[in-house]
Image (cartoon, rainbow, N blue to C red):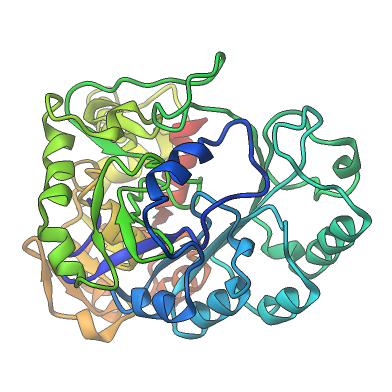
Length: 404
């Protein structure tokens, strides 16, 4: 599932219980009712820092969860702490409760992703649109302009926001039933059959199954598990290895392969059958290209490069690779015969019988294609070009071509 046994690749944090926004498309009551026997309603800073020790170095920390994260007064300090300790931090917030002090604390944090939930005209999200809220919003926009990834809205954008938001950013406004936790009309529903994989996530973080940490350290399946159907353990009281080996975690793994096992994932819009995976689309495109010598799709260039190469290297064995390459079956479509990375510690190691070599050795491979497995491969491309390697494509290019 993209998670190593001894350390989590990433964890998501619900930093408090009870959300002032009380969104129509968020099953807050389920979470509040199921969590009510737990005494800790706001995560303590020490709980957060201890949870980080369960994540592998450089892994992902998602500050979002099922409640506005800034309902926790230490949210900004937590973000800064995670960033300064080498974790990749993703932040999803409505900015409700954000103060000038919070902004000052995180203003130099290079967020891996930053999505802002904004008010809607239908009042589906109960924003209090005061002058102070708008001032804070404008200040965040000015400071984080280039670091804002997207906006989220539960309906039509509120008139107060239309002139404020950045025009070149994507806006997510698709409403779904939160893995069957809502029964409202007009929402996207899912009942996935057969073998499935988790493809939930944003454009830059596709296919990452990230367990959810609640304020007292309780770990549930993910951010859709409002009813706490799958309690995996407690991150404060247990090692990640113990949580991974636990009965509930193993039930989820088996449930992805066996549809007779009742898991929340099968009701989630992020569940995708193996034949629908982007990797399966690419695999078929490569096969068709080999037969016909051309394609009538956006994938022609990419499929042609893969089909025509004698050697294929996947470069970048970080979080994205670990989360996706084998779990989402990219290995069956790309068929790399060598790996490489800038990290000297993994040179000359083998991953699933494929050797990871230092970049300078790539020049020894004839007719080589390099597929970069990072979100931003600018530095990698420059390094490879200095080695005389120019036949390069990125996993993000592949995703884009498949989704067009």
